[in-house]
Figure 1: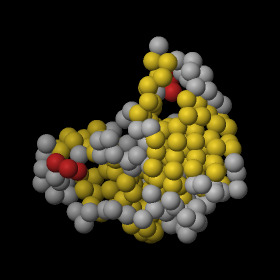
Figure 2: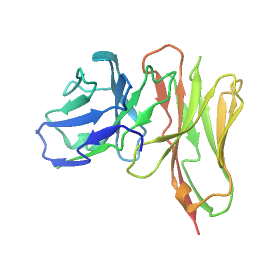
Figure 3: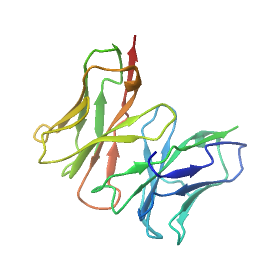
Figure 4: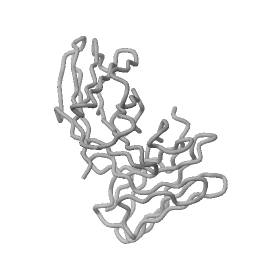
Length: 114
Length: 113
């Protein structure tokens, strides 16, 4: 158990809909990262938050947004969903920067868009 | 563009055998190189982290090596077990701060009886 909690584990929805994925980082970790992993693809970095503020952006679509709350949990909002958004979405946390410290991943949220 | 390439893409071995997975990267400079194990449908779990000054790092039956001159790393698995069946991902970070991690697409390992 990495200590990173993601909900829901599975989600099935229709095209055009909006969903919210939730992540609780490990106790004491200030940084939260979101990654997308499509079938047979590598992990694609979406966005990072550090102590409530956006720190870095990757290949995140404009239809996607995220935020980190004062209690350090984070939410990833996916809107106007398309079939291609079907993927595993992982949250990870670290004490400071992922590039220098250990990165702990949650178990992921599997999104299926029909 | 910084890249991390892994080979082979997939591998099947018999239980008890050893295997070696390869990682070539172009990220430069880099601060550390990591190997993760990802079971199907699960989150990646860290196996080893090596800084540019380290040549080898072990974690049980897993041994990672790093040659910073040739920008190559390998992950050696000794006496494989069925539970080693997973995807093994090589990740390289640079010292620039932020989330500058570059992920390989992984080697899918299957261990059979």
